Image (tube, rainbow, N blue to C red):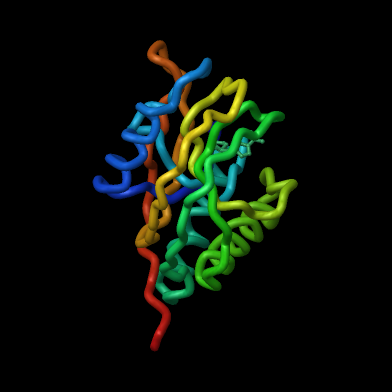
Amino acid sequence: MKRLFLAIAPDAAQLEQLTQLQASLDGEGRLVPRDNLHMTLAFLGQCSEAQQEALSESLARLAHQRRLPTFEVTLNTLEHWVKPKILCLKGAARDPGLISLFNQCQRLAQQLGLHTSEHSFTPHITLMRKAKMLPELKAPSLSLSGHALHLYHSQSSEQGVLYKVLASWPLTAPKA
Ligand code: 2AM
């Protein structure tokens, strides 16, 4: 069994903005390492080999049919989420492409009997874990564009948790 999730990766320029923002966060907590920064679309939990294969086949088919849309989202609000104890940069899902992609990921998870989100979708990138408070600081505005969907394996290692990309599928611009 592997702990898997579907997510979008920031590009190099966005990672730079995110690490600069992280550097200005003070207070207690653990910064998410640069290589682990991502925007989750579906946390799937523990998956069998068969579930992973079925998921990959479905996503490959959807990608081939050009049904996984590209999207834009602006993340511009810094928030402290008390229950999961995280600090994140969040935005709102307004782009129909992003909403469709989220819904498709959740639907696949449900069809395969995997974990599905118990909350409505708030696009966000977690910057700090074990966070106790919200620093007083103006958040930058980060424009994220999604061009690929990645399947990540969350692995525990001696250096902490490591997110490894197992597979990626291209997103397709909607026809004008
Ligand atoms: P996050 O998206 O708020 O940072 C891998 O664990 C990713 O899946 C994390 O980024 C995590 O939170 C997200 N995730 C969503 N729901 C989760 C859950 N119930 N348990 C663990 N991680 C979850």
